Image (cartoon, rainbow, N blue to C red; front, side):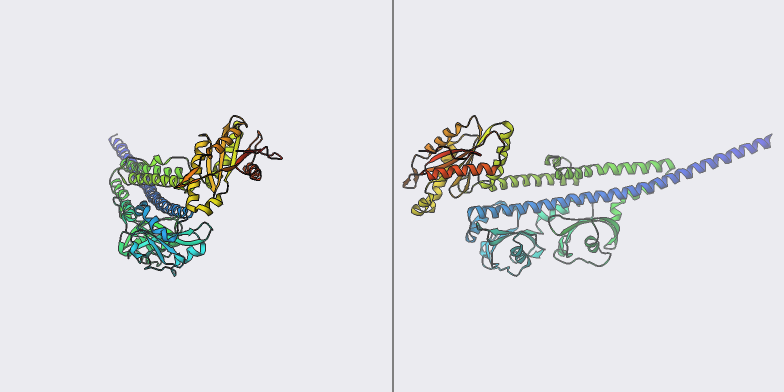
Length: 542
């Protein structure tokens, strides 16, 4: 019995040991496989993290270029509206203090390429000619603004890129161009990009399509051609689609390279992150997991995978916010966070930039829709506003009135008293016109002495007679211009809509017919014409 018992004990022990060994080997195998899966997932997650961070940085650079381009466009529109000559450009540039915050310099050139204005140093006027430079020639040829290739400024001697914007006069002729310089060494451009990698390791760089460095932590490489040989970082950035790879060497070390092309310039932004630093947490997990039991190995792999997912949450949320804002599904306030890590800093930078862009857009809209002389709405504002007013009236079942106004014999005022007096008459006429109408009415100057009024929320068509008489009466008092007293009158053609939907052109045509009838009857009066009527109703003269 004892030998049999010993046999069964020995057999059970061997079976137990075999099962234990099998379980241990299986656990280690499962842990190893899990670790490999976790490593692959972590590698992909870290790469996606870098790609998402890079996408955010690219969006930041794109938005900065757009904001600066809009600022130059608003300046050229002011030149068009105010009829600013090239001789007055220096004064105009110096009056815009915000230009100094956004650009290292803003210059203006005439059609021959001669420097006529310089924001930073007016002494440089007349000392520079850029007629042979590619960005000057291309801007003249296309009549559109562009982002230049990087070059060294002749005025400051520093590496820059520039934004160009053509100057167009009221006749549609190009009379010169503006050039806004962005210094590549300026902290507002380079320091913010370097700050994104201050704690994470690695570095961000930007190259042009020709392989020229626009941004690099080694400032000595700016404006130089990067190594474009096969297997180099520059070659991978320029010759492969957007994405990432970990099969390249950077200064003899394997690196994780992610890159993305900008939308607003022919540049590519990239990040080089040493593999040793990028995957250091993963290597630590592997060492500890291989030295532990199967359960610890499995838990370590799961923990590493979960930890990676948790670490990605802030950046994925930030990337989701960027996508949501671009689609119009979220407000910029989602960027206003309190975190102190690199994601929080980047998010707050987006918030600040977005606020500045909104303010700039509001200022641009105000400048674009306001008449520079009188301060009231201009033709652009009228063209946008009037169709919406007709649609509102149709939905609410109300009538809309629209009046065309001309200042009688305005050309004679200009000829006899000068254009300065004519401008003063326009300003005073706009002031009286604004005071004579209701707060619900909209006044705009179309061009010259042509004005328009849109009357909304009319209780009845009879209201037009009262409003027309009130405007005529508002012009009875003499216009005092300096020491001269002028008698100024106006002719008014009013169109009144019916209950049927009408197009803006039909209303304008009816108002123009009414104005023609007033002028034919001797001016200084008004006439009301219903849209679609065969004839103008009786002209009422003052």
